[in-house]
Image (cartoon, rainbow, N blue to C red; front, side):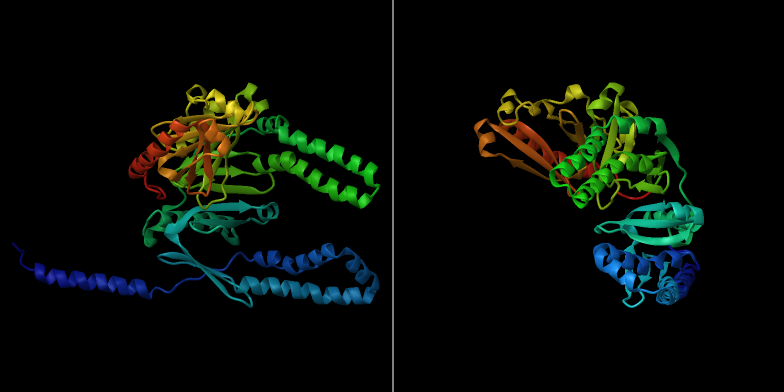
Length: 457
């Protein structure tokens, strides 16, 4: 049954759609440039080359400097400074980016051109970072985590407001919003879940064994080398890396994890941190492969834990630097919806005969398999509980060495999409075989019932 005039409306509707498509195709691609302060950053590249040469061969560098007269040095600076400035300007001038219907394009290169085509649906994290000088200048760096790439593409630098607006647009486009409305979505609202006070962070670093071990090595090893070699260069070559390691394990971590805040938004968990360099990261939904709850020995009396992540194709690795266990588990529940962290009493130890394979330390191993996760613990002094959702298991393997075979023991390895492996060590051979068979079915069921790996889904 048809309505009079309907046949006329159909061709008109088709013509209207075709006209819209033609207009959409005729819209010119708008390419944008980075912030005007970017040439100052690029101009440092020639200076870095000279500094690298001087550090690589300090004797020759010193000889060349002693040969230079004042007039020659001034002429060199008069030529080098404008040349560096010109290099910075040209690299900025020849760098463009544009957002199309399907991808983000980044064109760079002064002599050798490079064009990166980043598919919007493959973007899984967009982070905004602000080094100290960038914060002073009011600019920010945009870093993109893309599925299938190890190196992050970045846009450095953009205005702070422009960087946040572009981040919101890219996330909206990755979530499936239409190009016409993506820029209107804006940044998704965030609700704070956790904030780590500076005092708690400082005490946690003091109670970390790695801090004291690296500091003791920096104080003990150099004097011993001096008495053994009486060589200043040997002592400096050893002491400086040790002092750097000690600083990185204490001061460096404090500066990097200062003002750590975790917030929940429709596009994932937002992580903001940093004293000098501010970083705004996003834990992409559905991409978390493994969650580890770490409990150092000296933290147990206070009930503190650290939460680490393995995210497919992303460099995000820390979710909570330090927090009470109850609060940390509530944050884990937001990362892995429907997952409950098994209590310590639910973890089964290996059989007693496992001490013939790993004396004493076998007591630190444990295993629990629930309807949602494969949980394995290791460590006696520094406990670490790894949680792998069944939907994220890529493969399961059973291994058994000659000594383990003699004691009827085996190990079950669970591989995830982040190229990481979680191992249940020293299990009874029959139990391990049953785990191997059952995990395949649990993984199939988990993938079937898993939530979509989409932004704002």
